[in-house]
Amino acid sequence: PPATLVPAGQRHRLSARWIEADRFQDLAGFGWAAASIYRCFSRGLMFGTGEHTFSPAQTATRGEATTVLFRMEGSPQGGGNEFYDVPAGHFAEKAVTWVKSAGLLAGKAPYFFGLQDAMQRQHMILLLYRYAGYKGIDTQTGTAPVDLSRFTDRHLVSDYCLDAVKWGVKTGMVSGTTATTLDPKGPLNRAELAAFIMRLSKNLSDAETAGR
Image: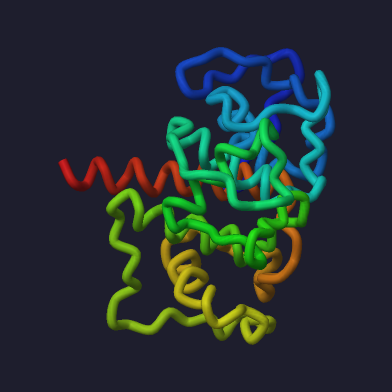
């Protein structure tokens, strides 16, 4: 069920830490993502845009999205920086070089990553799909076809993202922006980024538990 905002003044235990559940005061209308936002915050994966603001509707850039995944992986070492639009020392530099060297996400053009460009929803799903495979998760959707017919904009999914989107829908990683739309080429916002990351975290945790 959708997450609800915790009443002001209460505290909510997330990831074995106590944090103020009313810290971010701009989550009205984003109750469905509130739990994911606070979990990302408590784990040091995402931070606010101000002391009491998260800016959930703000577009997430490609640099920001890759950095969140990079932090979840434990900030591993990547390769060299070949992108002219990723300055040395930029907060996302190590994340960008890691996703590129790990084969998780390429640049938008030779030597151009698109650091400040909006992360498309389908590209975020593709990144998570590849990361799940990187972690040893079976991302095959099986012999039964995944039905995307309820999404009226399914034809907008790029061919190279189609398998990832089908995986996302089958596993519940992707629910659509409405009951009938995926908005695959639309910009990802910060609330969606937090929700995707926490769904992936649960997917990985469930797979690890099942493998024991």
